[in-house]
Image (cartoon, rainbow, N blue to C red; front, side):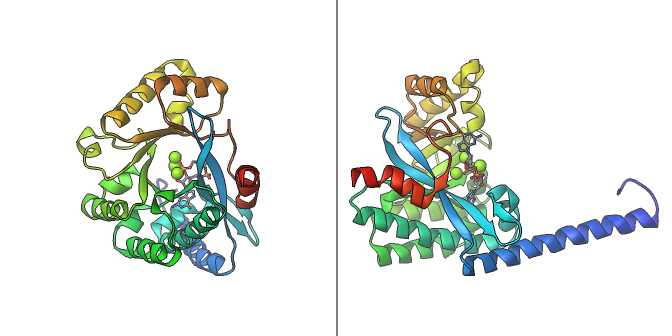
Length: 277
Ligand code: C2E
Ligand code: MG
Ligand code: MG
Ligand code: MG
């Protein structure tokens, strides 16, 4: 529309921007309400040790039971949340929930970890660090059972502040993973300085494993991880063949639909916690 000349199209164009801006504000405001009204829910996807095939932890993935729009996945709201300050409320909620879950698992005698996703804004100041510190004092869990997932760009865009905060979190004993590794900067100059424990290979590469071309990339990332003394997990494992190749390449951990889709917390606990309890 912007390309067409004339006042009418300009008016339409402006209206589009206004509509978009107001829908952003609506989503952000609604997220605040959703937290109060208990509409957010965590789905868990297991992470397995490739050598033993055992479930060693899970990633928490956000779902929103919206009263009007129905069941929403992050694609419908995470970008907007990240562009507004609403994401900080979401992350605050995630901290509380995750620590509560780990506390319960520990009380059941299970030593599984839980990872959750954080955003660039969470590393721009001390709020996340303070919340994590407070919650650790309050719940007295094993910090190594909590892992934060963050994309590389979110660290590099604001390197000083982000790496300082991640370092402090790791000093407290929490773990940090780079999410979607291989799709961002992947600069060797930075990798050396990233305060992290684990690389999560993006599923784009996992999905190309059988084609041969993907195997080279995955192998490079696995070797890189080993040289930097990092753990490495492959995301998006969907087939037996991929699993076998990943094992051969020496990838420590796997996650994907081949093992399980993300499932509601209660279902995860029933499947992976109760049998051994
Ligand atoms: P992510 O952290 O990279 O999460 C992996 C996404 O891949 C999840 O989508 C998961 O359901 C999907 N997935 C897992 N295994 C497979 C597979 O084998 N095949 C395929 N095709 N897909 C698979 P989901 O749950 O829709 O989440 C999308 C993204 O939204 C996440 O990507 C993450 O960046 C973001 N996100 C999710 N939960 C949160 C959250 O609580 N906070 C923040 N800040 N971001 C979140
Ligand atoms: Mg993730
Ligand atoms: Mg990912
Ligand atoms: Mg992602």
